[in-house]
Every structure is written in C-alpha cells, then in structure tokens.
Length: 290
Image 1 (spheres, rainbow, N blue to C red):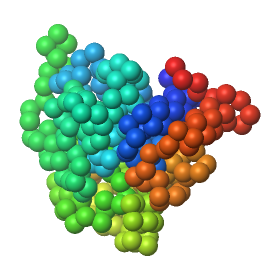
Image 2 (cartoon, helix red, strand yellow):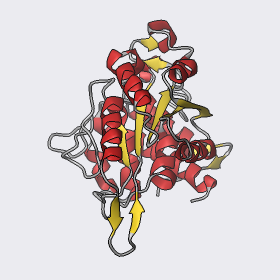
Image 3 (cartoon, one colour):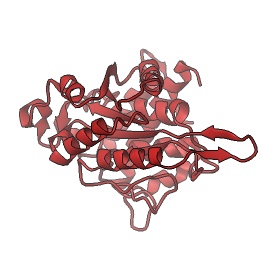
C-alpha cells in the first residue's frame, strides 16, 4: 500500500471503531482512535503475517499490553482478513470472539490475553528471549534460515506500573534486539493527564538509561511509523522503543485530548457526529467505508 492508501485505511478503521463501540454500548474510545495509524501501519506494512495462515511459525508476534484499546486491533485484523467485518458488531457480547480485552484462545494470532496494565512488555520480552534461545527454523523447500520479530504496544499510563519497568530492565540486560515496543504517548489515562497523575518525563532519557535504543515520532505520520519500525530492525545489541506521540480521540473533535473519553463509548448522536467528521476532511470525503 502507498502512504495515501494507508492513511485512507486508517480513516476507515476509525469509522469502524466508532460503529462497533456504538453497537456495544461500552468500551474505550480515545485510545483506539489514537492508535489507528499505528495499527494500520503494523497490519498493512510492518508485520510479517498471513491472515490465511494466522499461526504461521515465522509470523511476527504482536503483543497488545494495553488491552482496553483492543477495538483498534480487532478492526485492523478484520480489514486484514482474519475474520469477517460483520463480526465487529459482536464486540463485548456474550460468547463473542471479540471481548472487551483480548483473549488469546478466542482468535488466532492473539499472542496473549491482556487486561492488567503493565504486564504486556514482560510477556513480549520473555518471548523475545525465548525466540533468541531457540534454534532458527528453516524453510524446508528453500533451505533458508528465517527469523521473526516481536512487537509490543504499550500505553503511557501503564508506565505507572512497577512491573513494566522490571521488563524494561530485563530487555535491556539481555540486549533483546529482536524486540520493538511502541509507546502510545497520548498523555491521558483514566484519572486524567499522565503528567498530573504520575509524571513520566523525561521518558526518552529513562529508556536510554536502561540500555534501549529510542526513537521519537509523530504517531499519526504513517511514513514515520513505518520508517521507525524498519530502523529498529537494523539496531543490534539493544531493544528499540518507539515513543509515538498521538492525540487521544484522533479525528473526532469533541473527543481529542479529553480524558473523559478514555473509557467512554459514543451515544447515537455522538457517533453520528463523529462519523461525519471522519468522513469529511478538508471539505471532501475521505476513506468512505469499504
């Protein structure tokens, strides 16, 4: 996909997030909307994966630590072909594959069940160490050694958790260069703004002190997202963290940067207004529903 195509895809993904949250009547709005560009880049440019063979041995592994943002992952997976888009209407319904927090056994290629914040990076780091310890697999038909990478998406708010920083230390100690972590630096959490609840800055310098390679990017610039992920592949002897500055509620004016929308779904009137804003950008229709 071209950058423009990826941008249009991200816009459509945002529209489907609004629709599924409205249908569910519960769930988180701000984080999923803010992460739409990152997940679009992951599923349609960065990850080595195959929706038709979701448990492919050589697939890249993607851990979602901030499980409450899972609507964006579900929508991206549906658009990538992991399951029919019609199933997005079942979000948070009894018996649905699409629970409010992702459950590993319900969908293929979900590497972990996430909910308690602060645990995802530890899971991803443990997987990265195990992957490095295992002998590389070989494609029998080609005789080529192949490797997979481990990606993790974390929220800035979960950096309040001590076990997250234990994982940061662990990955730095073992020089897990096959691990790339994205930090959704949107500056809000359920109780308010991060710098009021528990200041995180200087975040970049903290990761550097723990022996991580740090990249600082605009989390809505898909070209920067893809370039940063490719840059990480060329870094040896260190894990890489990509601090992606995002706007919570991106694309919906009355949600942007408002902590209230962290864990709140839109009502029918709000959803109608949000969809109108997403479909109409700069005086023209952008990313109509596919």
